[in-house]
Length: 243
Image (cartoon, rainbow, N blue to C red):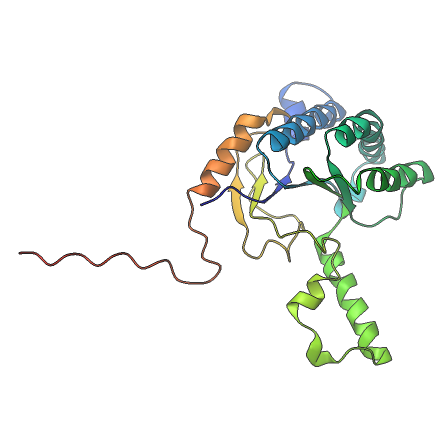
């Protein structure tokens, strides 16, 4: 099978990594940012066209305020330190998720990162920030319902393709491969619609320890599989009759 066009990653295990090192949780998140940098560079080197990372879910607002503040601060730090480098590397940045609940400075930085890199043609780095897939789908359904209500859309014309075009990821191909670290085996409200036929690889490594080798191993697992998209496997050649 050819290499994946789009790899999505649920970056899990920052807290567990910190606990194992007898460090505060915020150090796990900071080491997690270093893992993001390594992974982006590895994706560029392996010529992966699209990489999506789950950096802050809509459910993360339930965490202690100090941890939330640290996560938001790391997002600002990442943009300040890495935006110019990513732009120079021809990386296009797309940030999906709700743009509410943040301070004006972070909102401005998010917008500037997308605008500055929008014409780049290398790796597309999709950052899912304040993102939740159920709300994303709900929001898309509401948009279609409004169009039906005002008479610009017939209910019969609502197709999976039309609904998909209202999602945050419109114009981005669905993930071929989804990787989750830390050994957990769930989607956690991440790209539920888009991952209908995605191949999953769950790695028993905490995110701060993730590196290019782990990415290559996950891609190797992916390439060894047979993607059928609901169809039947290719028929094996018939056995020759015995003499």
